[in-house]
Length: 128
Image 1 (cartoon, rainbow, N blue to C red):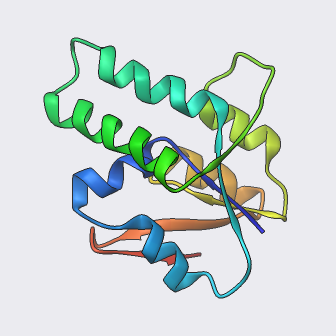
Image 2 (cartoon, one colour):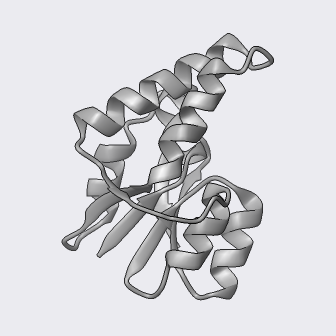
């Protein structure tokens, strides 16, 4: 099973002091591999460079980039120049789980019947 980590989901460790990787291991009682969309790195770098962003958001993005490298999260190459959410919607099928905090993306994925990993009560992850 492939689990795609959305950009905003990767900000959780810094924002809520939660180890998303151990939490995924806790709730996923099956073999899985973690992935990001290649444009996710661009989004995180954009947050870091954006002068309008708060420092805590920049720090969260820096930590996310470090975690991607440290945890050896694989990336899915895309050719389109769409935003990450749209690329996720284009790619996913029943062989994917998407980890996201984005309300609109969650609604669209539920309509497609895609399993989600979400943050609950700002303290733990849950598979839906």
